[in-house]
Amino acid sequence: MAFGQLSVKGRALRLLAGREYSRLELERKLAAKEPDPGEVKQALDELQAKGFLDEQRVVESIVHRRAGRVGSGRIRQELQAKGIDAERVAVAVASLNATEFERAREVWRRRFGLLPEDAAQRAKQARFLAARGFSGEIVRRVLNTPDDE
Image 1 (cartoon, one colour):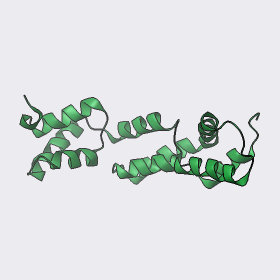
Image 2 (cartoon, helix red, strand yellow; image 1 turned 90 degrees about the horizontal axis):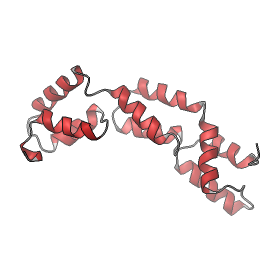
Image 3 (cartoon, one colour; image 1 turned 120 degrees about the vertical axis):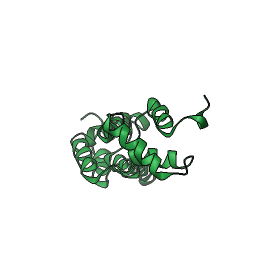
Image 4 (cartoon, helix red, strand yellow; image 1 turned 90 degrees about the vertical axis):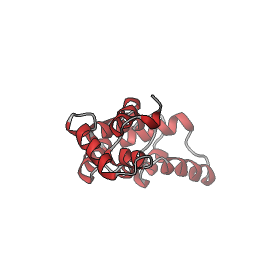
């Protein structure tokens, strides 16, 4: 059976077999091929009731996959873009904040490894960390701490 011939629920299950999706993501993907939004809503309601669609699993999946490479700011942004409710986002970000410095330090160490010698290097390293969602305070701490600590 081709992808276009599957039912809405079948297409949703096929997508969920690959990775966790938030409800909003699935609505967007399925609405592109399904003219009846009521059918999409009903299929997603059924999948959610059966536990196939779970926003907490989406949060855990993103945090697990991304925490080693990006800061809590970037993860917050990704979760919000996926339509995760604000309370779950806040809890996930709060749990990441405890390890933010260590994670930023490891990301910095893998990329650079040496403290900046001049203002241009410092700016480059700071932009690198900021682009990955680490806060200004964390960036300053990483760039002001000798590597042997």
